[in-house]
Image (cartoon, rainbow, N blue to C red; front, side, top):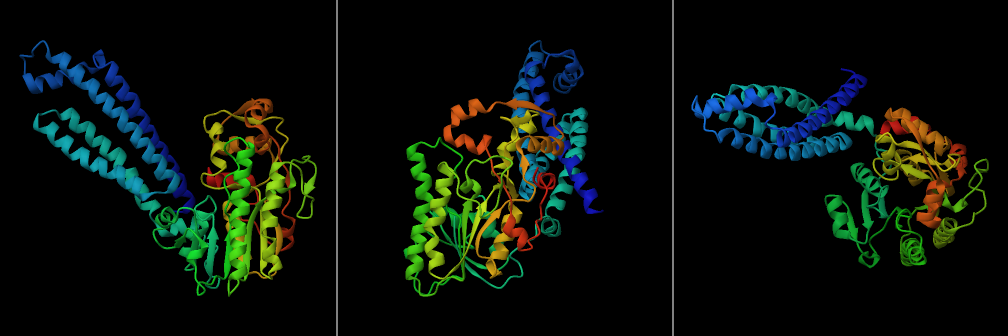
Length: 462
């Protein structure tokens, strides 16, 4: 079967499983509250005949309705568990989720059928048999399909495979970009050391494959690295940007950078390349018609100051003669991350524009971020600042329209910007303002984006 056909089949099988979970939820609710409806009369009679024959006690029917109500509550809870496992299996192509559902059915169905047949209640056995076929067949297919290495490899090539062996020191390795970066480097056979606040959590996250340290003092003179990738920094989207929060955001970036620079100054063997994260917030809030390149001036506001100070804290790296690549990241789209809250209203049919809708969203797919990092690691011509954004910058209203098209949902809602600014304060600029940033230097360097268009990126991720 061709890949396109199997992908389409997978979508419909997942939808079927969601429908089954919903029907169980609905059916359980009916069992719990309307178990004495006439529609259940034949069912109750079959139970009564199996247990009592023709001499049925008066209280028997009430006991059966009570039992059915308890059974309905159980069915409702199982429906929720099933829905969650289907979501996880679909979202992460997880054989563990599909296998868990298969194991539950294999435990339940044979025992339920056998017990029913012992009492001669054939209706139960028939229903169970139909359920087994309706569920096990699609689950077995999904378990096999999602477990094929070829499918996974085809959907996500490893950009670090094939480049010369590297020893890499990474900060921010447990974050949205960092976790995938570390795993891809390890899968490609490179040596990775993660500098993390919680090294035990990091070691667990990477199954012990990466060396994880809480302080650079744990490194000795024989620990040398070919590359340093500094992604550390507390998420800017979160609590309001109070003075205390702004101080925390600055410290999480400047502090780690200063610690790394201090280590660099004492290291006997300096890395060949230093890849430093920053953000397009450097340019501040700009007019949508103003095209911004790497040469554009620093903007105003807290985000501009944060990015400027972050980059300045790493200037000693360049002064020390190490090739430095600074990545001014746009909004990075990947599984989870910033894309999840952006798509959530659309999934519920509540998509639409925010504010005027004219604010520009400069975005990039996470796969392209990783590919740029992979190239920067070995391409000695890359140095200085690069805007990591897709060439297809779009307005917020265009994003809403495209998301609605990809998810097949209506786009009708308008959320005014005033309440957002009132609630979020200066942080509202992340949601209702933007910058029209272009990846000028990446294009000049001949970089070919894997996901240059928003629709293709959303179809890959949604």
